[in-house]
Length: 501
Image (cartoon, rainbow, N blue to C red; front, side, top):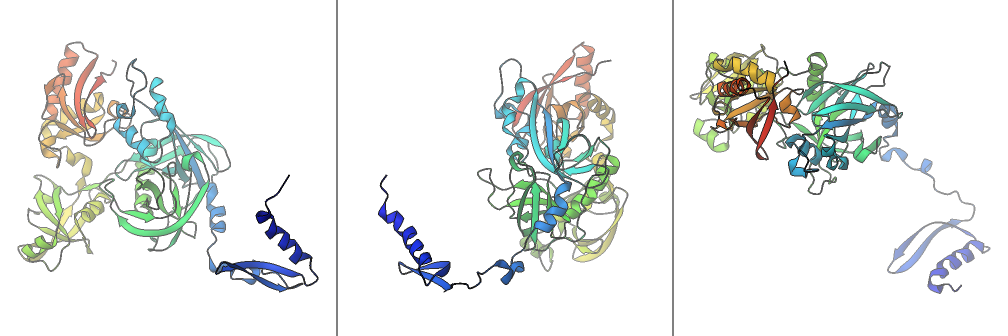
């Protein structure tokens, strides 16, 4: 067989060099002006090895990874899907909104396309142990609508788990492994990472469990529009589908964030990943462990940021703070004397940067807690003390629908309020402001912010109309009631069954 002389010459030349009496130890080469220059040392000279160099000039993550990796788990869930009759598998648009969002984000899998035949879909994400007795942190969107959950440990053991509690507003969830044991666990960091700090992410991207990536903190305090309490760490460690719910560590092996979202036009990593900071995650997880839900403080004000123009008009030295557009009647804010036009400058002695900052900080406080506000009114500063109420109860504002709430809760599994009383909801219908994760509404893909427009073909405008429609349907002997609901994906009809006696 003939050979190509042009390809064989370099090898032949190298053999001649190495075989000559003046043998050289070749350690590198450099192309200069099209000429190959060989760098050499006399025969017998010691080769350059890493121990002669600064091996610590670049970071190695091996020590921290070996220490924390056993605490990281893969989370696998079986999802409930709404049935669509005998028409065959629906497309993406036919899936419930939360499942669509789930599949668009991290945890979804290609299995979802087959699921409607059986009413189930499989999806996966990541998580990590936070206690030796088997409590696991993950994302809410990983386990939302799950009918069955299991975790797979780094050692390969698959363990059934149950959902202890979820918090959609911060996208956090806590699971509990059902099998008792002494599990390796990790702790949340007490100090926030600084811009430029190295971080390590471990998770289950595309089902490839135990995958380690590294990068730096590239930004702090990111608001990406995911929820009312956005305050994400931005990291450039490669994060992909399936990493959702997994931990990001500092080099001490402490959890500095819970991976939750990526920005990606293509669905793959482009170096923009977002993690819930440890300070938020730790407090929410503690509440979920203890009560299964998060009780949030509530003031009862509609607020907006203070722009430079507004600051100038109000005589403020700079933009910042939160401008009260309305203090709702009967709320803690109104009782404390706050009113439209007031600018909240600080909360408990710490400056309020903008309206989202105020909402986030109040939302992380407990009902019944008293806060001190520094307020600018008519060019003069004053201090106002406000005793916070309970957020969920206050969102349902009118006393007339208490009984309607009970009815909607038992049949639909929701809390509701008139659209006219919920900011940004419009004037038509009744808004869902709370969803029981085990109720019918959750199973059918409804969520906070969806608006019930009609019950049995009749328009509704207040919770009492919901109750009247349900009572009428039940009185007529119907087993289900049909409602028209406006969701983020558009209006659709949803059938709710009455509980069996």
